[in-house]
Image 1 (tube, rainbow, N blue to C red):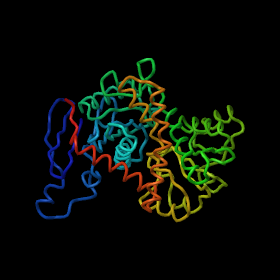
Image 2 (cartoon, rainbow, N blue to C red):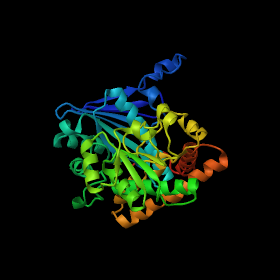
Image 3 (tube, rainbow, N blue to C red):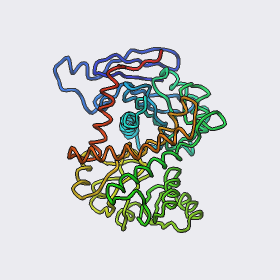
Image 4 (cartoon, rainbow, N blue to C red):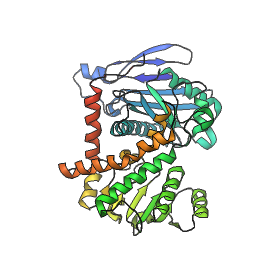
Length: 397
């Protein structure tokens, strides 16, 4: 079953069942609004944070349980990866997709792309639950949105998975090179983070080089590994950690000069110049900020700040934070370029621009006396408002 809901409480939504039966549904806030009661902020509608549409997808035969979040299409169709993850429960999955899809909208806007923001999550363990049938069922749900959402890879999915999704859907990017795609987007994600790190280094230390600096990389999967390689090439000293011991072993086998610590808790307490969270979100918590010894935070993970207000504490402690969706936009640029016929050189050139974008964010933060996180939000929102008003709600012709 596919269920969607629209932009305002009380709007009419549509539930499309696998049998083809269509059910009209309305927002749960409608009755309370008519009665004059305060809207229910604990339910799905109360948690949507301005999203245009959220889609719940279920296919019993394949075991598919997925949620697609579309935050905004004012700049163009929403683009964002599909995360396949064993969430603790449905509430955690919904929270993640809402936060990630909003972040994608801001990321695309700040990157200057004519794209909106979306994201999808599939509930389950990709090592056990992923199958051709499940991916193809998911593809049919994406196809049913008629191009309002383009999907790509994320945690738990890869380019080969997107090839399976594309067997049922036209709105897929991040495909394998064999099928005309860009392949692994982690290459340019890491490259963009490195460019952002160079920009923050220039602000903090008046040099764009990380040579001689000690950088801690938490999470050395695809993106983290590429980032480590670039840091070593630049002359940095690198320390790493990852919950996946095999990922660490593969990295240190190729780069024995890399140091290893047991976990991220030990890492943030160690003597670092730069801390690069490259795993899941929420890495910058109150506890981390209290003990962090690094002068700069610049990493690839999405939604790094555990809650609103932490950016102010970072400022007070003199820690320079490079907004995650600003510096990790290289992967989005790569899969977006695929939509017009992929050119790695063109995508890399655009990702190089993350250096200047980061500098622009940090300069605005300094000029307006706000945190870099708020400065990045202001720049993204300005573009969505100024350009988006010309287009209105995007609907495929």
